Length: 162
Ligand SMILES: CC(C)(COP(=O)(O)OP(=O)(O)OC[C@H]1O[C@@H](n2cnc3c(N)ncnc32)[C@H](O)[C@@H]1OP(=O)(O)O)[C@@H](O)C(=O)NCCC(=O)NCCS
Image (cartoon, rainbow, N blue to C red; front, side):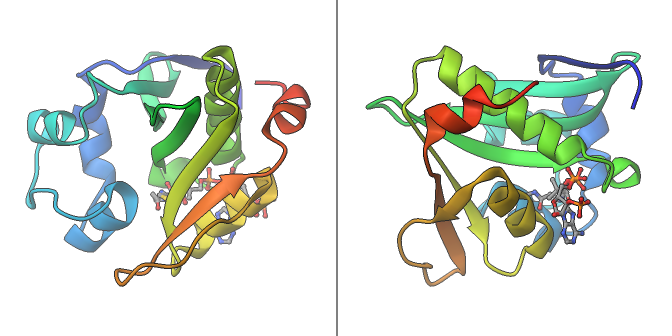
């Protein structure tokens, strides 16, 4: 896709992104349990701590088409979170592109371990993460959340072209 840019997320991005989420279940699958529903841009921005966590968007003409976060978990561990692609842009490689940018950012921040959490019934996300080299790491919890970790992080990121 032409003219896709990567930049830090703006609070105005979330007012677009909030319309990609149509149900409380979709909100939970994307962002985890415990968020307000119905929601709105400012509430969501605050609840996903978008100002505190490193938050990024892929944009076309400065309009977001994908969004994700890199949460610093300490001990050089970066955690990919809130990965989402606009519904009309899915299955065009943007989720993978977004994640590869986040992995490059994690390396830039000197992380040596990268983790994420995903609901086990989120097949699209699971396929994407496995394709990137993530493997199951720890047990599925009572809510159905699978922790994953990227194997051989440094080598994988060296091969990316974000
Ligand atoms: C998960 C998500 C980010 C994937 O984004 P995307 O831009 O469609 O993904 P890509 O086009 O980069 O797909 C890369 C690979 O992931 C897998 N994949 C993506 N969507 C898939 C689907 N619906 N079904 C099966 N596999 C899928 C495929 O292996 C795909 O490669 P392929 O198209 O060559 O077969 C997107 O579906 C989304 O935003 N979902 C809602 C939010 C969410 O659940 N986020 C994850 C939270 S953990």
